[in-house]
Length: 229
Image 1 (cartoon, rainbow, N blue to C red):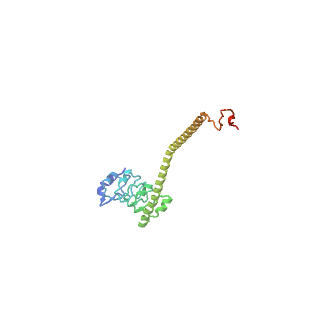
Image 2: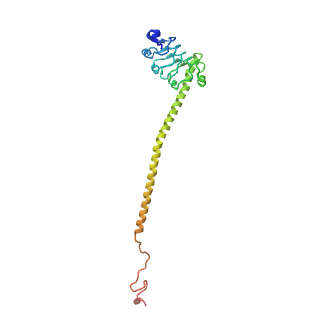
Image 3: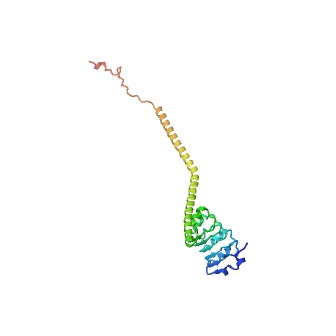
């Protein structure tokens, strides 16, 4: 495995102001640790090497402003390189770009020529034949990926809402069962109370009503003989 240190000497010796040229160095691995010690190297050329992958630590090189990775065989997950303004990915066998690419908010220039891009991305990227088209490529690709990222975020949020709702459903169903049971018990108690009150009412003796008073001398309602004329 060829590294910059073994192929081209000390990296600092290759540093020209803020530019570091590691092109044509027969690299198949990026010396991330050594590059991290050179934060002044904001412009980096890694073109025409044998790079097939980028370690996750590579995205920690957030000081990079201009990066040339053309003519390698790389995936394109550069989302954390948030300060990138210029990115050359010419001829990298790229088919698509990850949604995380949308995080490159400062990107002003992008070249995706000579990649087997899928039809939709190829149409969005355009031809990248000159400075103007490469600037347009960066702008259009970012806008499309930002929309895709927003759509993905919305779908993820919807999935979380659905999962939360599914988690709540058993609790809601249990609460409804409890409410129904409590309502049934309340109605049963009301019914028992009414039945008890009715039984108590039936136990009480009935009062005599509408009875004429009896006369002391005999038949009810007849005057005594002494009062008759």
